[in-house]
Figure 1 (cartoon, helix red, strand yellow):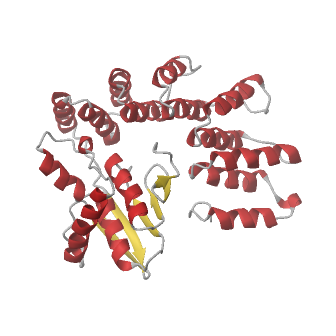
Figure 2 (cartoon, helix red, strand yellow; figure 1 turned 30 degrees about the vertical axis):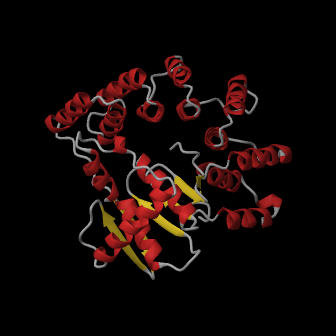
Figure 3 (cartoon, rainbow, N blue to C red; figure 1 turned 120 degrees about the vertical axis):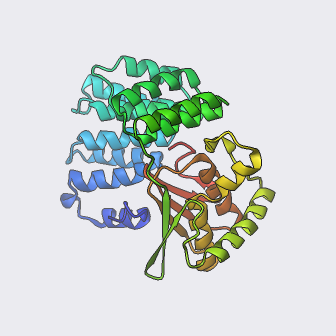
Length: 333
């Protein structure tokens, strides 16, 4: 529970204080998964080493999934590939399944090894799942690998024609490459297929109350105060090096309008409210129902540095623990 909430130090204290005879695969895996989800690859490998040294509890499929994911988030591709090869060879008594293959695709994509990841997918013993292809598409978006991303994105739309997220990520890739006709074509395809994107919303708890924000929100009772503070924050952020990422706006409009649209994203509103409502130095914890966009992620990083706040942002994909301008995800999510 503490791992899921992001309190890993307390979770580890509880784990270390458990009698060794009471540590089951469930407790080991809970700690490993907690480290992995927060991008702490070195801690994952250290704990996995202790688990293997003890020999009382054997690693299972969940264990190896957490270890590979930890290598992926920790930018330890060669170590991850070595462990995966060990699984193939039978070193751990666990044969890789689709999720383990997906971790390798995520790991290679995270490292920018897009072609290698694409070839790995082609060599999979079974048909790649939407999750595997989605991981590769996300990597293509990050590294602007348009040709492979287009092939993967079109295949994903065939597999999951009602998943708006696939259209959005492929649209982001096209927008990054300046291919606005393709962006418009995808939007038209969504309309024809009646595919709708879930509205994004972010929320933050303050004094036992959840405060919800939507894009360009005008409903919050303190909206005027939040919007005024956000403009003040933006000025300080730009002085610190923040540059709005206009590729996150999927409309071919002028730069000024794109900046206004980005400024209204729900994460920025929630962070601003957190800064207003909490005292100096208090961590700000925000939750988002969708994947955070690249611009809001950059905004949150610089925000944490400028205002000296730890930011914990839980989106649809993972936790983002941001301290001093550095995120636990390594800028890949």
